Amino acid sequence: MKKGILVCCHGTRNPDGVNDTKKLLRFFKKKKDYTVKIGYLEITKPSIKDQLSFFFRKKYDFLLLIPAMIFSGNHVTQDIPKILNNLKKKYTTSPTLFINPPLLKSKKFLKIAQNSLIKKIRMIDNKKDGLIVVASNTVNSKARNEVNYLTKKIAKKNKINFYKRIFITLNKAKLRKDLEKISLKHSKFLILPLFLFRGNLLKNLILTIQETNEKGNKRFFLCSHLNNYKEIYNVINSSIKS
Image (cartoon, rainbow, N blue to C red; front, side):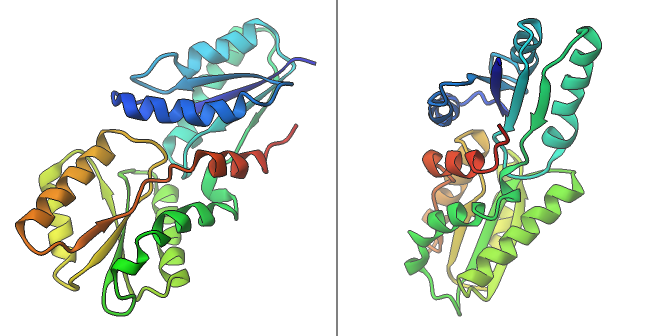
């Protein structure tokens, strides 16, 4: 039986981000009974479409698609299924397909976010200070609700009374304005970026926090992005259907 895995990523112009995706890929490469490949929705090559075409063309029996994504945004619910449907029309036969759910669907995912937060938690007073959770901007209402849910759950678990979530773009002026508006309520904040890989959004966030801290008292403490790829792999692997 010919079995394949395609790790699906967004894509980035940031070479560090591409290297991050390859770190995650290396864990999947250890599954010797699968042919494992990686594909990107945009910017980075090879594309998801080209990699899927390989599995269809070579007549694989089983194909597992793994979105290396946290939430149920449009990439998971619309873009990847659309590429699949178009390929099914092109080929007379297709593998038995299974699309793994995004990471948030796993009960074990909270631990990954918690581990990033706990390294900086000593920087704030849980009762007096606050938490800001940062995610990529999305128009998908389900994904936005998932970000809200995770933000609340993280805050409650760490007994942080004040918490906010913000969705960001590459607009630094808006990001700075949002941070300054929130910071009027408290003096210190932990900032938890919900990103699996380094990219321009994360780079922009880091620079904005640095600039904001330099203008006044240091009050924003940035946690690392979710970069424990061994743990991320374990969370995904625990939900894989063979």
